[in-house]
Length: 106
Length: 422
Ligand SMILES: Cc1cc2nc3c(=O)[nH]c(=O)nc-3n(C[C@H](O)[C@H](O)[C@H](O)COP(=O)(O)OP(=O)(O)OC[C@H]3O[C@@H](n4cnc5c(N)ncnc54)[C@H](O)[C@@H]3O)c2cc1C
Picture 1 (cartoon, each protein chain N blue to C red):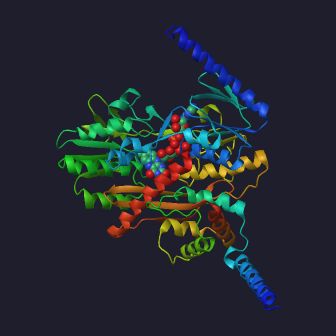
Picture 2: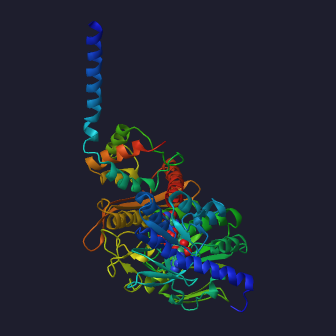
Picture 3: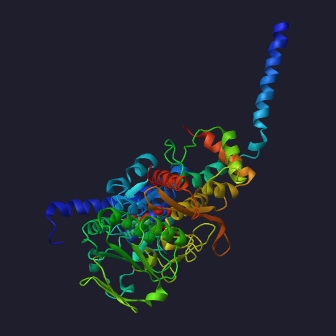
């Protein structure tokens, strides 16, 4: 009995954590296809594997990408090119890019 | 033809028939057909994205005259000794191997837009549902009195992909001690607005080390130029007293050049050079003219899609287009190619079409580890591509920042060439 209650508790916690991730507000409205289209702009400079001069972003955590883009958008991170790119992205576009790059192989 | 041996004639004939058969084969597969003319910054990107993103649903043929593409971007760094020549050459092999693009190395001679066919140098016709033209520029040889195709070995423009930049480098390296290098930049609009001034910086970089008493004179048909304050401050800092820039108002206009005497005559004076780089005015590559999609020297486009205003089945990308606020750069051509690729896929396979988004950044190298940049975001207005926001490097930045900007440009070069050819 104790065992069943424990398993139930674990199951509920997992579900909540999972839901919490999905409901991560920064990734709300993410649209994979849109992300794929928008990624074209990033891939002019970001390579898939090399970090020489410009970091590789393929396979990076979605939340990490979204947060970075927001910091550039708010000009809290330096780099004119990235500030410019991020300033032209809305919330949905940032979320879409984040999940798209996360899906790519490192 | 009389010079062809029987054997080469047979293989020529075979090659032609296989090309002639090609459209029939693709019609059989009933896939929509896209033909891309020009495998440079715009065309290679467009062919790759259409093939890659449509996952084989679209039959993509890329027609490119050369077997290898030597980028004009970074050719100035080759000139200055920062890159070797091989490092700026790229092959088309991956486009066919990885994405199934049918790469045909030939010249597109003419376009029959009513029959939707492109005629090749071999005589074959390739039919299309959508045609993308990204032929880059042609040089207007007659825009400067005395300049000509023959003159280009004596006074190279080195403004198109290819080996002229090697000729120019050899000439600079062999210039007499204390000699004069003259540069005649092109009038607006032209490919790569900061390019002539980056070139001057790279020549100065060589001369400072190998020929420090030499002089550089710039006889400009313009009164101002891209990143002017940054370049001029850089010249003063790294090459003090070496570069003299003379604007159009001061010299009163370039009257003619003489490749025999190496003279450049202006209203004000006649300049004698030991080495001269003369870059004439430019226009869209001939095939765009032939396709009937130009107005004057360039092709007007619909900003939302890069379709030409003249013919909705024909798209023009890169230098050949009138992209209004966007400069004629490799970055711009690559950016426009993605907008066109998305639109073409939508038209031919009903995939989703997203709003056009354009961007550009041009990095230039002024001296070792002294990189500068200018960039902007653009949107598709009704009539024109319009600037949304922009930036430019500052004159008072520290050395560390300039070094980082240069390193960033190396990342960009690797990124864009991967984005075109991988
Ligand atoms: C010195 C210099 C420095 C530069 N530096 C930079 C830089 O740092 N950053 C940057 O973004 N841009 C730079 N540029 C500009 C950049 O090179 C061009 O803007 C860019 O290449 C334009 O791309 P495109 O597709 O329009 O034409 P191109 O890249 O020129 O491609 C055209 C291709 O079409 C082929 N072609 C043409 N006609 C036909 C035909 N009829 N049949 C078959 N093939 C054909 C040609 O062989 C060529 O390969 C520089 C240019 C120069 C000259």
